[in-house]
Image (cartoon, helix red, strand yellow):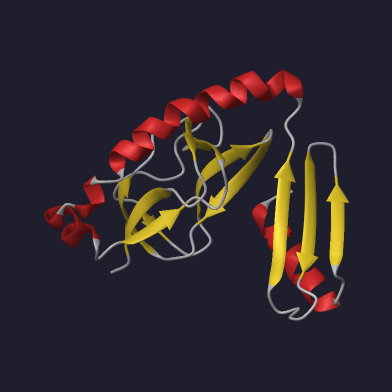
Length: 166
């Protein structure tokens, strides 16, 4: 189940007037609770369960990735860099997973620095729970910078690409 399916499920539950919906699949559990007084603001709880055999391999990349992310947090506050990047649009990861620039190891990358992109073009693939999710561009422009290395773990809302919309 990808992020768009989860978002549409949340909207459907909010419109239906149900106070609570639980969905359980093989490797994911989702509970959606809507407020009893105001159904326009649903409260969502998502619990993902990873099988025990996969837990050690999934935990290691996340732990090693936490330190570089903390180290990179202060750099955007540098005045020169913030001014340079402010004219660009940042494309961020919609999910947690492993970032891949290519559709498969023997194929070329989806995009390179300098590539022109249009809205709807596939920029990369993020693998989450053995599912490969195409990440499509929501803007048109030119790729200025690729911020993540191939086969690296990424977090939700982590910047992936800088795009010049002009």
